[in-house]
Picture 1 (tube, rainbow, N blue to C red):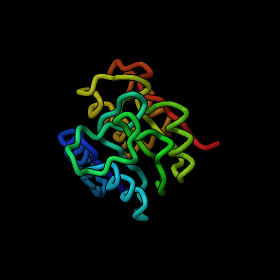
Picture 2 (picture 1 turned 90 degrees about the vertical axis):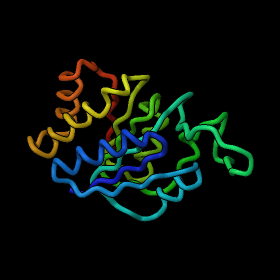
Picture 3 (picture 1 turned 180 degrees about the vertical axis):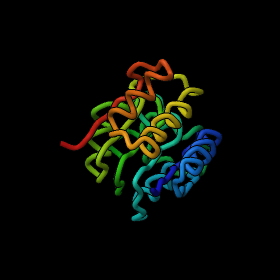
Picture 4 (picture 1 turned 120 degrees about the vertical axis):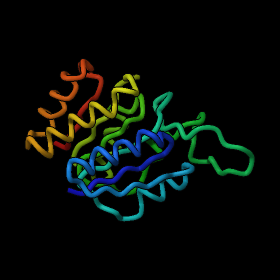
Amino acid sequence: MEARIIDFGAHGEARLLREILESLGAQVRLDQIGNPHAFLDTLNDGFSADFSILSGHGKNGGLWFGEYGEGVDTSPLKHGVLPADQISGRLSGTVVSTACETGNSAWANVILGIGASSYIAPKGFPDGAAMAAILHALFFGLLHQNLPLSRALDRAQTHHSMGDALALFTKR
């Protein structure tokens, strides 16, 4: 199983997720991104994975890359975040976002529209410290218990008392 983590600001989370996935037997590619243009370039590099994780922060319904000084081109951003309608490129397999407020139909339509078969993301603002544990349980269910995606997600969220903090969208 091949996984890709696109780290656009949650560096500790991304490294921990890499360790978790590798401990479960996955081959992991970690891309550390510094700005919105590099993020978009990464989505267009043609790399294909069974699972891709967008590891970073979200606010106001978009991906938040942090603050930038003078001279950094932030033209893809709207009101300080990268909204779903600015996303283009190619993703495959299951895509998981850890960014708050990206578990909605606008994000799902874009992610599924650029090639993903399914998309999982937070509906609101889940406990950030719990995300790695939930994703560990999710990938354990998928890789070691051979559970279907929806069942593995339900178990992971129930086990960590997260209810339905993460939304699952699939292609029809």
